[in-house]
Image (cartoon, rainbow, N blue to C red):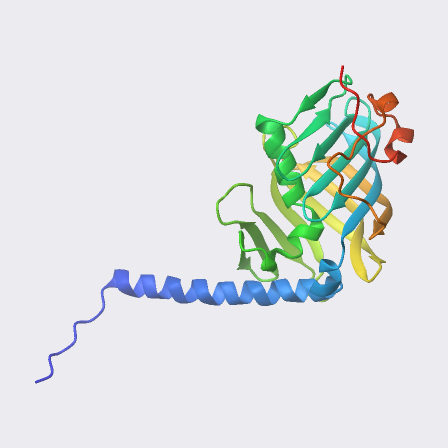
Amino acid sequence: MDLPSRPPSLATVVLLTLLCWSRSSGQDALQLFHKMQRALGGAEKIASVRDFEQTVRADAWDYSGNPMGVVHKRVRFVRPSYLRVDQVGRGDTWVLYFDGTSGWEILPDGTVAELKGGELRFARIYLNGLELNTWLADRDPPYVLGSPARNVITIGPKDNSFPASEITLDPLTFLPIKEKGISHADPDHPASVETRIGQWQVVDGVKFPGLITKFHNSTKLAEITVEMTKLNGGLKAEASMALRGDCRTPQVHCLLEPFQHPARS
């Protein structure tokens, strides 16, 4: 004899609905992510980049809106995890080297310090947030993708080891036009950050933004113009990517020097 089935509880209905939505959302997120990849040049093209070098010029402002002059930055990256950043600007001159596990920095006063605490976390977040890494997030198991709204992708770590970012895509081209997240540029004072992206340029078949505008807590802090992007130029992932000894306090010309380790006092 068949017994009448008990109608599902409201909680069961809600749970099933959420599970179905989650699966659908995950599928939509992956499909949307792949559309973005294709727009950028394709996953294989992006993955073929072994090393990356970029120099930018930025007009900068402080948190009160006062002009801070021009900032120059040079970023070098060698897969899988070698990162070197040189920045020169009024009151904001520094150098960072990170090999994915440890590293060092040169502070504005010329002091060389090992990365630790908030500075080590900043380096990890900087490395994970590089475009060439986030654009291949679907190939990296620690990442999880989401799509909270139409033409919006979220990319973040499963273990919450660094903040997730939210990328809004152009509905026609599927290229990123805006990104939101949390900045740890000041490790002790995280800030909400919005990045507006445009003027795309093609470099060896991969598209990179040529104009980037950054806002921290809704205050405009930088308008960045990309001066040069080079892919697969033969950068080497030696154990030390550093400045020459005479560039301990970096100047613009020092940004062009080859990798060596700085002399320590």
